Amino acid sequence: MANETGSAPTRGTVVPYLQLEGATKAAEFYKKAFGAEIAMAHPVDDKGRTMHIHLYINDGSLMISDFYPEYGHAPEKPAGFNVALIVDNVDRWHKRAVDAGATHVMGPQDMFWGDRYAQVRDPFGVLWSLNGPKR
Image (cartoon, rainbow, N blue to C red; front, side, top):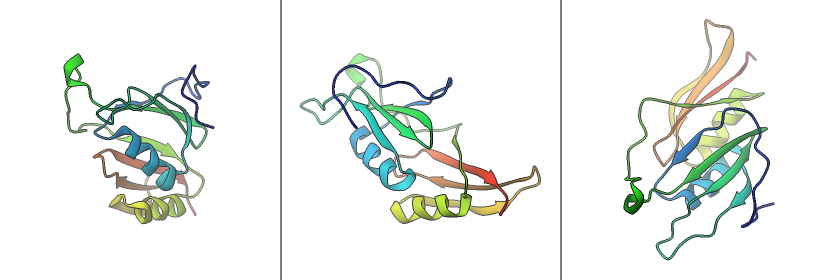
Protein backbone atom coordinates (compact mmCIF):
# COMPACT_ATOMS: atom_id res chain seq x y z
CA MET A 1 0.00 0.00 0.00
CA ALA A 2 1.43 3.38 -1.00
CA ASN A 3 2.08 6.00 1.64
CA GLU A 4 3.32 9.56 1.50
CA THR A 5 5.16 9.68 4.79
CA GLY A 6 7.91 7.72 6.40
CA SER A 7 9.55 4.96 4.45
CA ALA A 8 9.05 1.39 3.34
CA PRO A 9 11.47 -1.46 4.11
CA THR A 10 14.06 -1.99 1.40
CA ARG A 11 14.09 -5.42 -0.22
CA GLY A 12 17.54 -6.52 -1.32
CA THR A 13 20.92 -5.02 -0.61
CA VAL A 14 21.64 -3.45 -4.00
CA VAL A 15 18.78 -1.24 -5.14
CA PRO A 16 18.64 0.52 -8.52
CA TYR A 17 17.62 4.18 -8.22
CA LEU A 18 16.51 5.58 -11.57
CA GLN A 19 15.89 9.20 -12.47
CA LEU A 20 13.25 9.33 -15.17
CA GLU A 21 11.19 11.89 -17.02
CA GLY A 22 7.76 11.21 -15.52
CA ALA A 23 8.43 9.04 -12.46
CA THR A 24 4.75 8.83 -11.50
CA LYS A 25 3.85 7.62 -15.00
CA ALA A 26 6.78 5.19 -14.87
CA ALA A 27 5.50 3.75 -11.58
CA GLU A 28 2.08 3.17 -13.16
CA PHE A 29 3.74 1.54 -16.17
CA TYR A 30 5.86 -0.72 -13.94
CA LYS A 31 2.68 -1.83 -12.16
CA LYS A 32 1.24 -3.02 -15.48
CA ALA A 33 4.44 -4.34 -17.04
CA PHE A 34 6.14 -5.96 -14.06
CA GLY A 35 3.47 -6.26 -11.37
CA ALA A 36 5.11 -3.52 -9.27
CA GLU A 37 3.61 -2.40 -6.00
CA ILE A 38 4.08 1.18 -4.84
CA ALA A 39 5.53 0.83 -1.35
CA MET A 40 6.01 4.55 -0.77
CA ALA A 41 5.62 7.71 -2.83
CA HIS A 42 6.22 11.36 -2.15
CA PRO A 43 3.51 13.66 -3.50
CA VAL A 44 4.05 15.43 -6.80
CA ASP A 45 5.06 19.08 -6.87
CA ASP A 46 3.39 21.89 -8.82
CA LYS A 47 5.27 20.74 -11.96
CA GLY A 48 4.01 17.16 -11.66
CA ARG A 49 7.37 15.78 -10.46
CA THR A 50 8.09 13.58 -7.50
CA MET A 51 11.35 13.33 -5.61
CA HIS A 52 10.92 9.69 -4.62
CA ILE A 53 8.88 6.57 -5.35
CA HIS A 54 9.82 3.24 -3.81
CA LEU A 55 8.51 0.21 -5.71
CA TYR A 56 8.52 -3.48 -4.97
CA ILE A 57 8.99 -5.65 -8.05
CA ASN A 58 9.24 -9.43 -7.76
CA ASP A 59 10.59 -9.39 -4.17
CA GLY A 60 13.05 -6.56 -4.83
CA SER A 61 13.08 -2.78 -4.45
CA LEU A 62 13.37 -0.21 -7.22
CA MET A 63 13.49 3.50 -6.47
CA ILE A 64 12.68 6.21 -8.98
CA SER A 65 12.40 9.98 -9.12
CA ASP A 66 11.98 12.74 -11.63
CA PHE A 67 14.84 14.94 -12.78
CA TYR A 68 15.39 18.19 -10.88
CA PRO A 69 17.71 20.35 -13.02
CA GLU A 70 17.47 23.23 -10.54
CA TYR A 71 19.19 20.97 -7.99
CA GLY A 72 21.85 19.58 -10.32
CA HIS A 73 19.90 16.57 -11.63
CA ALA A 74 19.48 17.39 -15.31
CA PRO A 75 17.69 14.99 -17.66
CA GLU A 76 19.91 12.29 -19.11
CA LYS A 77 18.96 9.47 -21.46
CA PRO A 78 19.44 6.05 -19.81
CA ALA A 79 22.52 4.38 -21.32
CA GLY A 80 25.19 1.84 -20.55
CA PHE A 81 23.18 -0.35 -18.14
CA ASN A 82 20.15 -2.55 -17.86
CA VAL A 83 17.98 -3.55 -14.94
CA ALA A 84 18.13 -7.33 -14.52
CA LEU A 85 14.90 -8.89 -13.34
CA ILE A 86 15.15 -12.52 -12.23
CA VAL A 87 11.79 -14.19 -12.87
CA ASP A 88 10.13 -17.59 -12.77
CA ASN A 89 8.83 -17.52 -16.37
CA VAL A 90 10.67 -15.30 -18.86
CA ASP A 91 8.10 -15.81 -21.62
CA ARG A 92 5.18 -14.72 -19.44
CA TRP A 93 7.02 -11.66 -18.05
CA HIS A 94 8.20 -10.65 -21.53
CA LYS A 95 4.67 -10.86 -22.93
CA ARG A 96 3.19 -8.85 -20.04
CA ALA A 97 5.82 -6.12 -20.46
CA VAL A 98 5.30 -5.88 -24.23
CA ASP A 99 1.51 -5.93 -23.81
CA ALA A 100 1.86 -3.03 -21.35
CA GLY A 101 3.84 -0.97 -23.88
CA ALA A 102 7.48 -1.98 -23.53
CA THR A 103 9.46 -2.30 -26.75
CA HIS A 104 10.55 -5.82 -27.64
CA VAL A 105 14.36 -5.86 -27.90
CA MET A 106 15.19 -9.57 -27.69
CA GLY A 107 12.67 -12.36 -27.51
CA PRO A 108 12.89 -15.16 -24.95
CA GLN A 109 15.70 -17.58 -25.77
CA ASP A 110 17.55 -20.40 -24.05
CA MET A 111 21.05 -19.03 -23.60
CA PHE A 112 24.48 -20.67 -23.59
CA TRP A 113 24.94 -19.93 -19.88
CA GLY A 114 21.96 -22.13 -19.03
CA ASP A 115 19.12 -19.66 -18.44
CA ARG A 116 16.21 -18.32 -20.47
CA TYR A 117 16.68 -14.63 -21.29
CA ALA A 118 14.87 -11.73 -22.97
CA GLN A 119 15.12 -7.94 -23.15
CA VAL A 120 12.59 -5.11 -23.34
CA ARG A 121 12.93 -1.32 -23.26
CA ASP A 122 10.37 0.61 -21.26
CA PRO A 123 8.77 3.86 -22.54
CA PHE A 124 11.19 5.84 -20.34
CA GLY A 125 14.27 4.46 -22.10
CA VAL A 126 15.36 1.88 -19.52
CA LEU A 127 16.54 -1.48 -20.84
CA TRP A 128 15.31 -4.46 -18.79
CA SER A 129 16.73 -7.97 -18.99
CA LEU A 130 14.49 -10.84 -17.96
CA ASN A 131 16.39 -13.85 -16.75
CA GLY A 132 15.05 -17.16 -15.48
CA PRO A 133 15.08 -20.94 -15.79
CA LYS A 134 14.85 -22.68 -19.13
CA ARG A 135 11.40 -23.95 -20.01
